[in-house]
Length: 70
Image (cartoon, rainbow, N blue to C red; front, side, top):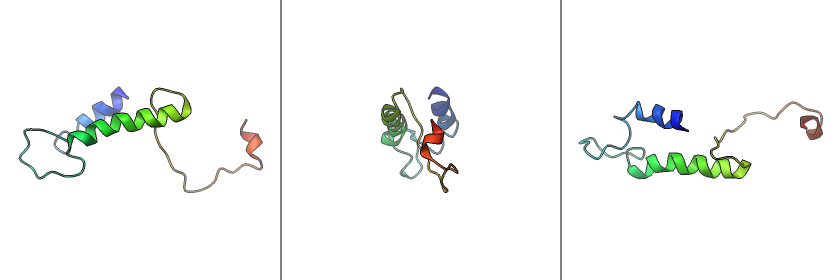
């Protein structure tokens, strides 16, 4: 999680900066910065860890039976 937040901070001109004179965008708010952390915490809660990451798949896993995944 620290590395993820560090990565976002590397693009600081795109995200929230209380001293910025640039137009406010959906990702240039303090709430967005906070949402990165609380979304990861919520996804982690779903799988029993501190932080998680949401992913989607464009195709199904190729297995004959869901029990093959155990």
